[in-house]
Image (cartoon, rainbow over all chains, first blue to last red; front, top):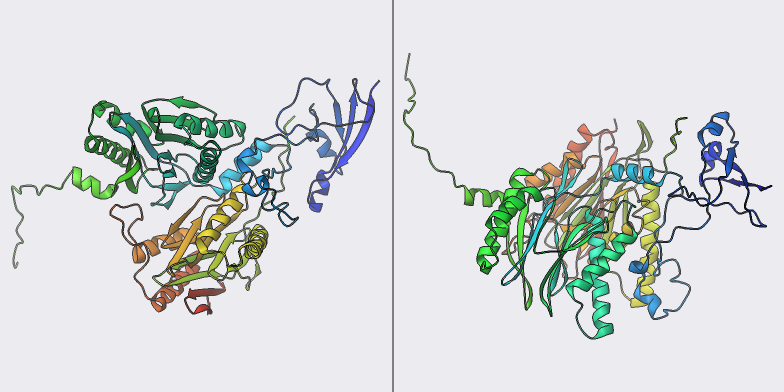
Length: 347
Length: 223
């Protein structure tokens, strides 16, 4: 028949003794040594079903874990090439570094409900997000614009977040979604682009850079990263614009807007867009689109920044407070008074 | 059969508030000293402030066990840096290190809300504010913790500095003098203590300037 193997595993906290599991597994196909596979993310249907019975210190625990699943002691493989530090490449000496300078993997919590844990953790720490960003290609190059508000739940955590990230002097990335995710992975992309330049003696193309980022994000797909970014730049083939997101999508295009305010920005952007705009006209179009998005979307606001990417690299064209833009576009007209109320004096 | 939810959480919130204000040549970092869990007070004298380097001081509220682990990790990295480079880490460098350290635990976050204060390489005050997973930003002032939603609007009103994103750029540090800033911090905590149950007992203030570090304490309401 099968091999019966008993494994008892204790979760990290002594207090958790009540939940310690004794696992009895019966399988028809088996190896000489009993091995139990625990798949944190998925129930695999490839192995024959293992009957699992648990006896913890209380009878109620028995009922709770009676479902079929495979257990694996393998750690899930993540694409951690994004985290390799330069030190390891040059064989940096000494045991001092192990575990510090080379941090090859993300620690994962030991839990049988990874998705639930992530949902709760994210609810609790409420990382900053929410935004409007846009970018479009036109005759002279690429125009990139964004607002600067970051919200944590309903609280505005900052009105001055840099959402246009300078990857290198001729490439920009925009930030939408989780602020920490975008900041970290853009910085990482900048490092990889620089390494590419040093290794290949030429600048990386926008296509290449966006592919690097998209591959990293794809490998973390399903783990709760929230990144909606646009990579805009000028390379040998001219202006380039790609949209990359944490679902693993990567699209080449000429007009994009990302974020909670994007529907409003699209409305203004699409109706005013022409390929042969001049730089000033394009900048004004981008600025207006961001302004209108901040006007209607609660999660967008702060300062509307506009950048231009041309053959000589990027240049910041303007940064205007959207409150002031409102009064610039819609100045307050003194209204004509038809009947003036005069104070009645005395009795 | 309904799936039983885990009723043990690896996190707890020990409450408290932290504030930091950057000046032209000084930086003030302050935090209360109350550590609570649920409705109980664990101690009235717990310091949430940690000096990471000569010119960098971090104050963190949230789950103090995670904060302690984070402080240890940063202290160790700083020591390695000193051995390698024969100098102390600058505040902007420490800021990025803290951001990366927080992000490496992206899938099992440190439940710590940090504010890092110090002097940059030009001697100007700098304050960096973080969320729990490492997104950070240099600002002129910041508040984190259970009283932050009470404190921040007041600081915005008193200190509102122009956004660093405006073009042409305008300076982000507060025009207040050091004594005025310390006074402001004391006022702010006195008010926060009135309305936040997790803030109180004692206020610890650290002032960093070109002459070095100075500590001040003030009693707060203990109820």
